Amino acid sequence: MRIIPTQIHGVVDYLVGILLIAAPWVFGFAADGAETWVPVILGAGTIVYSLMTNYELGVLGVVPMPMHLALDAVAGIFLALSPWLFGFAEFVWVPHVVVGVLEIGAAAMTQTVPTRTPGGRAGAPI
Image (cartoon, rainbow, N blue to C red):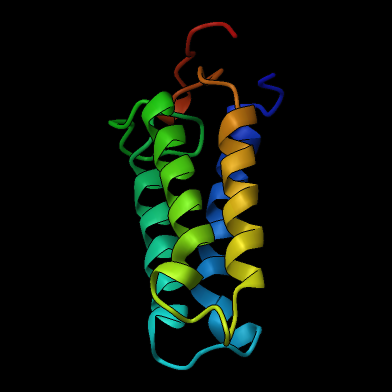
């Protein structure tokens, strides 16, 4: 059931991107290894592909919304598994898993057609 409008998803994209970049220092797990850089890189990537997405809060409008949601799901899976993939689960894993699972859920519940595209042009009806 896709109940999250793309405009709300866009706001969440930018907030999650910023949260991921700041999380290692805000939550005290910055040890300059994968536990730090996986969320930072994924957060920066989220902001970049959000700016490129064809939805209300995108700028370039070149990434279709279904592709954006697929990127969100893959990033969420990678983030959630990263503590075990990179061997830092004994140090920290909860923030990676929680945000990763929330990303997967948001991708699964977001509508695939924006009501407006970048620049305010009307999109296809939902």
